Image (cartoon, rainbow, N blue to C red; front, side):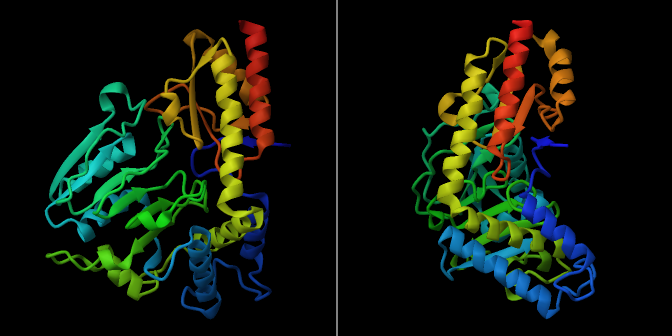
Length: 354
């Protein structure tokens, strides 16, 4: 049975990654042991983590000025780790959605936060580029893609201070000059791996300037010194991320994925725009290529539409509980076929109820 998986995270993974990671649970590399049983300090695991690190740097075109960390606690822990490591007095933030707002809330516990832009008064339906980043800030923080509302930053500002970016829902989805960032973090369960692991990519020279004691587990420098195994890491998720990174390279890298993601998103947005029953509320220049949100113009039709798509083996199309409506998360591994199938359902619904 073909399932069309539009879940926002944990979400769809490449089939070959699922297959190989499943096999590793039974017998990892012919060792007779499950991947779930091997030591996180064994040569086998150290090879996994080194390979994943190497692939991230090659895919993102990063040099050894950057350290790659595989941590736990999701992006939520990073809301505190970032100011713990980088904020002496004050930092600048963009408030572009629910998770960006939560990052601001945590940062305020460490110092002064200057919010340069907030889209809250317009339900986060757009992202302004009309803001100035003061050069006396310790860093500038932004969220590249806002999973709940479906907005995405298309360009990033130029500034002399470190740019910190939460890329949880669009990392590895498009080409960027990743050297413009001082620190990138991303929870893995959307475009990279299974749940339970967070990737942190940090330029090493921005660390060590804080005039305060940092608890060991919250200190990036200590994690770097311990090669991400200060404590027992999520072995399975790191292995799955390594397989996914190989898949990304085999597909043609970020150039291929960017074109493919743009094509998938455009097809779906085009259908929403011309379908008499649906609407998207995001400003067109800020529409996300990862999370397409849409609503029925007549709310009383929701029950009928829900019945239709669920009957056709579509999963994960419900909008976030804070927003309602519908959300199609169309990450790297979601095939074009699933987009086309959803569009046919929407057309059929229009023919039936318009």
